[in-house]
Amino acid sequence: MSKTSKHILIVGAGSGIGKSITGLLSLNYKLSLTSRKEENLKNNAENSIYILDVLQNDNIDSLIKEIPPIDGLVYCPGITNVVPAHHLKEKSLREVMQVNFEAAAYITGGLLKAKKIISDASLLYISSQAVRYPFFGSSAYSASKAALEAYVLSLSKELQSKKIRANCIAPAYVESPMLEEARKNMSDSFVENMKKMHPGAFATSQDIATLAAFLLSDNSKSINGQVIEAGSFNINIPAL
Image (cartoon, rainbow, N blue to C red; front, side):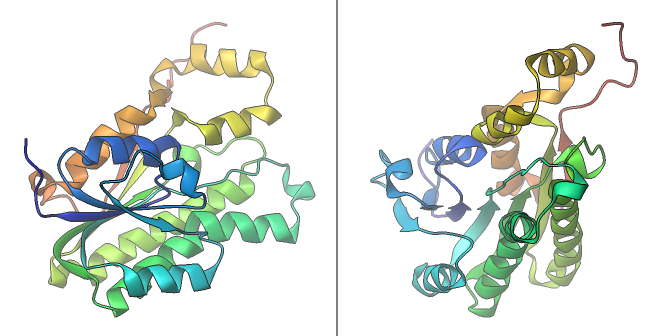
């Protein structure tokens, strides 16, 4: 298939889900890609590259000023910071909220204000089933993703008259660098038991990329204001 004229911005394209989405969409779309490190975006010479730290509003302002109008946005950055609630510090809480929610809202609002999101665009944000199925130590992470989902559902209503859609994908467990980071606080036996109890909950980043590609395409024009769960937890837990 030849490339369309559609232009998609992928924030956090350098690793994990964002990297897989980039690989899949690069076949058919014009892409603008962001990452904190330029080296994470090597082999993407055919796309527009922006070095972006979502914790720095000045970086975001520069991106919004420079980027051409877009037909789609994918917001992928995320950090877990798995710690018990009584060990949660203000600095780490602020970082989780900024990366997982606030930067998404700031980028989207800036693009809208600058009229950089065209009619019929699709906006897509990566959430987590930790909103509905929190785990030990996920208080900040689950709360930040819940804020993201509430924002996106409200956004979908605001933008409906402009024919701009907004949806979330909420994976369960995705084999990614972020999951590897979270596993530092989990025993090997815990991870193996989770796989036995919830085999349908574990997905690859390529699985999420395939779903993302559908939601960004014209084939999903009737889907708006949805949190689409990717992967499922087993309610009939077998004996371990």
